[in-house]
Image 1 (cartoon, rainbow over the protein chains, first blue to last red):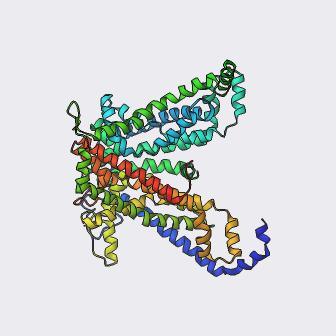
Image 2: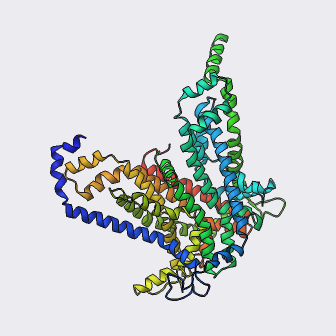
Image 3: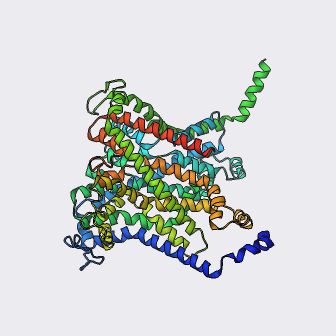
Length: 290
Length: 304
């Protein structure tokens, strides 16, 4: 707080007059506002198009507000493809992947954070090393491996290869390290088994880290494209993202339907995001602050 | 001698209690199996595949040695794909990152509605690439797209955004910048907020103006964050696939054929698994070298 009353600083403070300061703030707001509008423009156009009639979308000059709001576009789009099935598939795959990832990463993170065994640090470094392996290098071999396991076109193939990941282990281990040993020692004295300790003590205390991992895992799985594209080719197993791409190929110029479908795909995630945005953004900053 | 061994054994037992060793490895089994099966083994398998010719349907692959690599070295489309990817990468970095930094700087001031702006700017990143690609496909539509309409208001002639080989890649770049702006901005914002105020005060005492502060305080102290964003963006940009698949399918005339799309085409559309594996190995090496280079240039160990 010394800088507040530092006499040298007093000389510099009135340099920017109040009017200039107001101008700068105004400019800031304007720029941010313009940026925000440009960011939202595509979304607004998406919704606007989705509510127009089929022949109205190609009008020139294009209109923002449809002459008649066609809510039924959403119904038509929904019925033109098994969207319910697609959403259920996505929900199932994403949820399963997330839960399995949480389990696998929690166990591994506990092992790295709390247990002492020879080669522990080496193994952890090796795990971090695998983070450098880009997904594209492994898709062809993974495709063949999954095929050999007879998991092609199956939920197993969609879920299992995407479980785990060094990132989750790293994140959880970091958090586990900050939990005091005493809690565990007390529990061990009372005769709790290792598993019991993890589930009853460590995990409940790690809620921030777990929720970040849950969000990232779920979002990542929901938005995934390349792997589901390769590993499924029947409609019954399609997830939402592939369903949208297929929909595009079938309804190529029916943009009002395409936009309605896109809205379907985007809306759940946006809603989820609005609910948990603070944790989400914090999570991202966590990954950056290392 | 025996007493020394006993002492060594006792120290070892104390450092690694039996129970911890057992559980340590036990708990690592799920992660270990998954990592080995789907991350480590594939790297070797991929290398083996790259030395074979296989269409996936024949019972066994045919050994061809280094033929795949020879072929891709002579294949102009491969160089073209790599160039396209580099073009894409540079576009994203040179335009997207300064923009994100600028926005983060704007947002770092004492203004109201910071959370609102942050949310708005971040929203495109949440939407899936497929959905965003769809929307931009429509926005860039030659005859009825909003972008051409807005340009016409400024008396700029309508462009064939996705059908003109020279404009296709910039269009994809623009869409990706729009999508990733919020993400980069959030990272930069965290970096900016981590700069202690005292540095700015000290600079002001020394007579620095706004630009001086930026050049001598902000930029240097932002280096770790900038480096992180740069690495993430570079590696991510070399892996671009989805938007190309949905918007342009590598066209027009290969203008947006990026390396991952090329790999996908080779392996899953032309059923050349061996060639595709060779290509993906080349990508792996390139990314590896890029990461090492960036580390060397930064001169610091940013590893956790």
